[in-house]
Image (cartoon, rainbow, N blue to C red; front, side):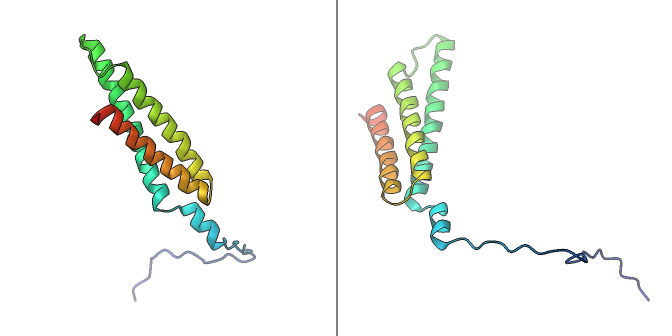
Length: 121
């Protein structure tokens, strides 16, 4: 007869106590999860931060090679826009209701203005 050598884990040890978990309120779970607007604003904020880092790296590389590079206005504009977007996104992540919507729209506006003024105009 074959012996069963598979490991077994007891479900509970003798004398163990169980702890009831508090059920979260559905609205609290929904607010913590966020919505499409908050997620879009977060993605745009990350994109602005990455773009700011790229512009700074290109400016440093241009200085090292003795070339003009993107320029101070381009670098300061991108870094400033990224900082504003991070602060506004932080508000959106911690707020609820109308403040989330307004903060998310502000991030979209900052991103649009940055792209328009520093890239397309």
